[in-house]
Amino acid sequence: MNNKLGVDSFLWGVATSAFQLEGSPYADWTSWDSILDTKPHITNHYELYREDLKLLKDLGVNAYRFSIEWSRIQPRENIWDDEAIAHYQEIIDILNSNNIEPMITLHHFTHPLWFIKKYPWHEDASIGKFLVFAEKMASTLKGVRYWITFNEPYVLILAGYFEGCTPPGIRDISLGIRALKNILACHGKTYDLIHEKVAGSPMVSVAHNMAALAPWSRWNPLDKILAKVARHFYNHSLLDAFKTGILNVKFPFKEEICIAVPIRDKLDFFGVNYYTRIHMRFNPFKKMGIELRHRDIDGYGLTDMGWEIHPRGLERVLRHASELNVPLIITENGIATRDCQKKIKYMKRHVDVLERCIKEGFDVRGYFYWSLIDNYEWLQGLDARFGLYRVDFDTLERKPTNAAAYYSYLIKSRSSF
Image (cartoon, rainbow, N blue to C red):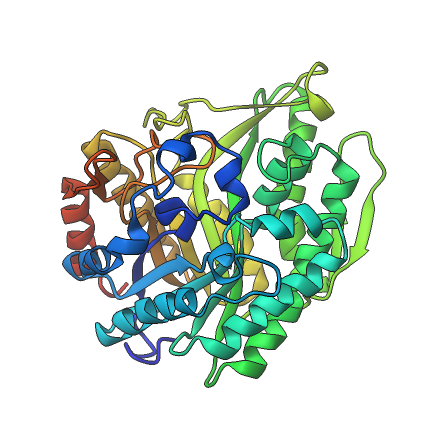
């Protein structure tokens, strides 16, 4: 699977996104969150990338997932920034020179401001605009085998169109479904573009956030129905669409929606992002009657973001993802906490589950911890400490943690499952 490291090499990596490390003056999020007025460059990774990439060597990883910040590439409509393209190409070159496999994400939540204002995803014109960007990247960037078209498209739709808490800030389910259809159409067309433009045998996927979803009360039939419906929509409807070319959406008390999307079999691997378990509770006073809660049932505690630590859920989502019959890569798994020992235990428990799954025959080819260094977290600002390296957001100093040392140990001790 990995042409530099050998077909049997497991991808041990870390994952990041461009905007969460470097910001961008041209992105929609910059004007969305006021904290970015005082910390517009966040960790200043755009300038300090060489130092940050050296941390990858210290960890001993053989893969690195990062994103291309679209708004830097096209700061204005129909305008290309060649220096920004060269910047990301240099990152790719540094990785390859150090025998670290680059994995690129083309879309990780942010957009050029001109795009979100004129061509939001529920408008069909959005497809053509994104494809121009995708074709430019596939034609220009060299030395990349692994491509992720979209990171967590369902999270983008739920937050941007159902709840309206992220750009474009719309609360309209029907527009959200239309936007999801257009995003999936972009994946299908981008898949073809990459295979046409990129030499060799590119590996193309999405990164799909999957959660363990359970009823708040096992004895309440309404809670059980909500959990079942949520599992189908959030976890399984995308898997089914890749198998059938039909997006099937079912919501409580609403008519079923079936939409043709051009993504059947357009996967070379499948990226799974997994963090937590969520409990569903029927509440007639909430939107769509759904209340989401976290509970510390396993006794492992909650993260600083209030998420339940539930390692067994990783096996459950990998089992479902295996139905796609393509290789799986855990493209994100991590914990927001200032407690380093808690971070270490989180990693160990999840990697233990991963090892068990592989021994049972699951075709998992990689594990990427989120994240390399502390970063901006979309709805949490700078307080969610996911990083293996601690960032002082005043001085921008990066400091290694015991969790970084432990991850290096994990990689060495389990280099081959």
